[in-house]
Image 1 (cartoon, rainbow over the protein chains, first blue to last red):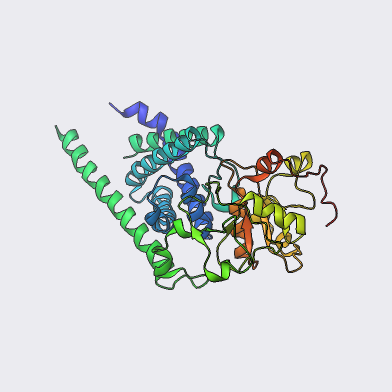
Image 2 (cartoon, rainbow over the protein chains, first blue to last red):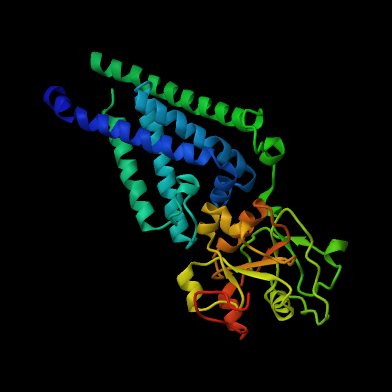
Length: 141
Length: 217
């Protein structure tokens, strides 16, 4: 049943898997280098309880790193894609609520390397990544 | 039949995989930051338990010289809140700004007293185009994004021993407090800001200047 379709689609699945993996690894490494700033970014989004902000800032980049590695290496790639989709959905929601509340804040998505402020562009970027991750999650074996 | 059971098994594998990824990520993150694998700066457990709501100190409007030293500071839940109230002090002496490890929020009227006396270095955290349209006379333009990526600009700030007063666009603008943190992290102390920002300054009818360079600094 999957025969022809699988052959035709597999390069795209690989592209999504490697692309999303690379994005997560890059984002993770940028944040790991400066958690203090990332903690402030997390605070600015005002979505997690204040007591947990530093914990989130400490561990989230590492989860991103491990799931990025899972996607790139192909080890537990489907789990990585599912978790990546969930995380991207959370990021879309985070950016969306910031826009709705009118917060003029820095994304912190790629640490201090990316100084873009939260806006529609970032929302679209995150939505596109979510779709790509979801696609990989559905298609990966 | 065979396909659906394979599918079910693979779903179990995915959940296990997700759990493994989260567990490994949590373990690495905690180990890296709290077990000393990260040498400098090591944040430690104290940082994990740090309560960010107490990050900003507030100097009351009626603060007179020496109040701060006597503990005349309060903490606020939301560093973005504009603090008002309290009769503005008419004391001739400027309130003393102590060296704290966190930004101190001033009221607009207090910032104005520092301005009148030339007792502080004003730093505009907004972008150069906004600065050129209008700023507090004598203020240095140091956009937060620039400062965060180019510490040389911070090192070049000459406070001449005065405290720093950072401001930005008022309202929900938070680059002033973010810049205040960057300044503190790069060796400055006595860093203050006022959340009313430039719009509040204009609204109060205080003097402004235009152009892209600081005058009289």
